[in-house]
Length: 434
Image (cartoon, rainbow, N blue to C red; front, side, top):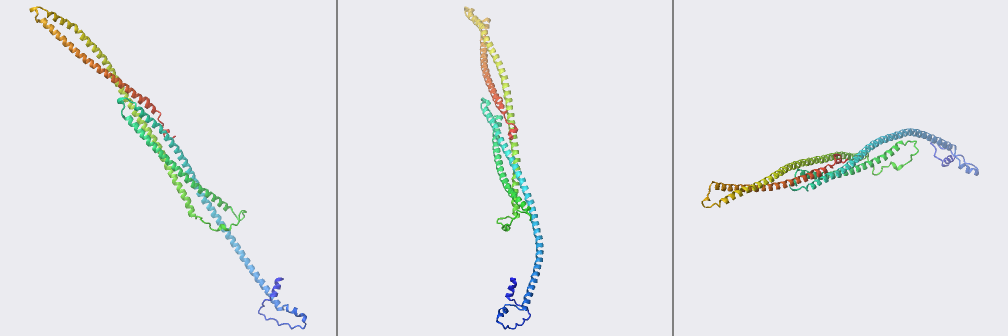
């Protein structure tokens, strides 16, 4: 009603029809106010017709809008569902991609962990192998010190000493190599742990991203935990693109692969070092043992020869002593014949006058005395030579006995001390660090 009154009051313009003629003036003054506030029939008809026209136009416009709205609603609903389905599909693909990279990260993390544990075990073996070299070094130096106690000519720089010095130098070089290799293993373990930490951080980020995207993929139009976040559609700062995202993980995996390859190469190198050092030590130990055995054989043979020669010298000393006794007895036995001959010559020298004749008997007695004197002189000379020979034999005996004592002492050092000590040489398994 109010709108209708407003239409009447506003007196809208009418159509093209001519306005009706003005009513005749009233003759009474009491009707003047009523006449000025009312419309005429033409105005009533025009207003009525205008309202109908406007209502029809509004109805047609509303119908058109309703048709357009229904069509727009149908189209937008399909587009919205299509876009939402595409987003859900892309989220699924993204989940698969994240899962693939996360699985690859997990595989390399496990490989780095296994490599690090293997290297730690090798580090322990290297440390044990380094400790095991102390025993051979102590044995070799003890052998060298013991052999300084050899006496006289036995204190010789023989093949045993040369091989022992080689063994000491070899052990020192092996110890330096084991220390250097241990330092390389420690460095690689540290590098592996750093690479593993980077992969774990990347894996953790992808784990969270997977959970978020998985939660996003589970959202639907009937979900009750969704809400409006108008600002979330804006592009955030420092957001990477798919290429840089993929490259970041690929770089991390590439670095991890490099460390895995380096760990594998180092593991093979350490195994080779342990094998080579153990074989070299055992080989040099065998060389030294053979040199000791050969030296003991030489000393035993020399000692045997010396003992045989000493036996011969002792027999010769006994024979020479008996010879000296025989010579002394022979000289003593010549005294009686010499006294007899000299007494005869003396008595015959007392013959008187012409009886003092150099007859055959005199000549024979003189010859007898000269012969006995010459014999005694020769026997005395022979006795002196025999005594000199006996003195030389005694010196030889003393020298032989002294040399035999040296050889016995040297054999004690070589066989009873050095070779017995070398039986404590570590086995190959110990030298390998087990």
